[in-house]
Length: 177
Image (cartoon, rainbow, N blue to C red):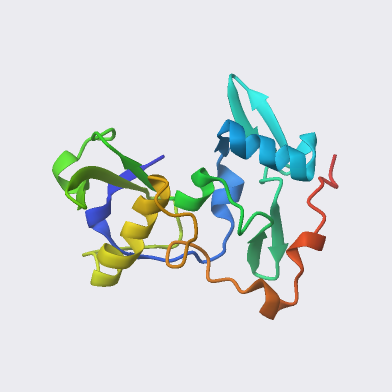
């Protein structure tokens, strides 16, 4: 992660590039792992160095990433693990990556520190807009804190139905190996 304080981000939106599904390993909670392997089979997840993770395909992309034209579709779009839901944001109780004053975000009388991975292509750098500060960022914080599950502003705007794709029918099994 190449962290920057949220105060350096003007806005964020998912541009459906799939980069987050190509360059990162997704660490799962026990419940997330169980739900994924129960639904998709043991080949969809694995354990490495005491970490449960989503499996990668032969091309080193996420097991659930499917290209769709110039965009990418997540097979778990509406059942994503928390790590996927909050990427590229990292919400912590202590200033883990430095820049404490800049990363400080007061949410409902609680001091939190919010960092953003600069590798995300959906970031626009600059002075934060009101929409980013008061709608998008609080939603990421609520997801990170398990205060909400449903995402509106902090996820892709992809409308799978309008693209005539039934994500349930997409075969996520690795065809390369």
